[in-house]
Length: 437
Image 1 (cartoon, rainbow, N blue to C red):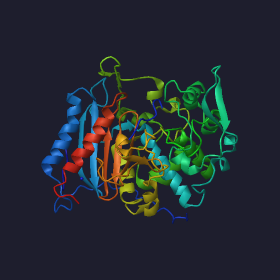
Image 2: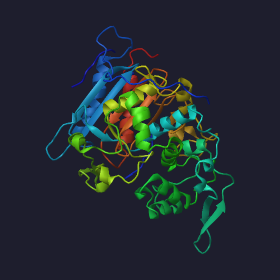
Image 3: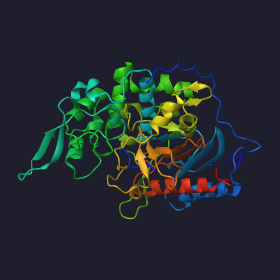
Image 4: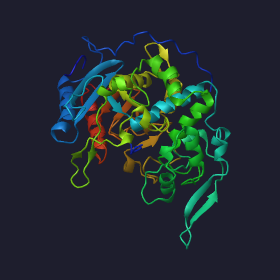
């Protein structure tokens, strides 16, 4: 199944959950697929190492850790490696195909970040604008600081409203509803934030919950990207899905990415599995309404978690970023804007998932605007790479120095497998270089 031409982390994700740019060129009527290179290699890859990478990814099926998997490695628009193995559906053993549709979950976040930066390029907001400029609902936010002797929550006023940049870098102080035994996250669950009927109601509910921290102090994975989705709707006058479709997906030729799977395409939609808490074995397929992604099971179009799509579609999005904002002559962002997106926006000495002073504790990963960012030379990924992943195990990274992107698609909740696969795939990709650049 592999097609070979020439010889190049992410964190936990939602469960169940400066100047104006020029006009975007109209897309071709029939977007061209990413090219496969036939001869005269431009990049030095070891064919044996690429074979080993693909064999290792497929072996996760033999080990019983996934049911289906697809990966793709692209450098400068050339598909260097592509593999698919396993099944997309348990009922009849239907295999993973090129057009299989996957739940992206938090890989929606970089898409929302790009949409935000499109509006930023148009002068619709500044990164240091207070979020209250666009959401007066957030006036008078409070911060949870602990419990008093009687067990009641202690709340203090925010020192200032969070900025848009802090919302985009998860430093605004908002909660998310993921952490157990945490007062703020408990309030998210009680308020059923992700069952909100629309983005405006989601904002109203979030505004009634205190922050975890004062703005700008720490990195806390948060509702911030869903807030951005609501902001895109307010600034554009469109629904989030309509903005994505008309301003990004259609220009890029992303024909199968949306917030739900239409009935006509549902046969292509992968099952999703979970893990047994007893032994970690696969269980499922999971069939709760939240996993089905039919139009009637979608509450609101969530900028932080809501998209489904194919490998081809996400490869076009990721390759656009690796190219500095342009694909097939269509400019989505300026190169300097993509570079800004992949820059470190965290306070000095702070890192994702860890707010101490040792970068070694977090594999040298900081955070940009809706993406994790590699900030050290000796990490698994080259310095300057940026990435994210999804709750069902999907992952991708962009290496702008080598104009490289890698995408992995699986559909499994639970455990640390997805992080293992992300790290291992990156190590094997860079080991496949015959000549280090």
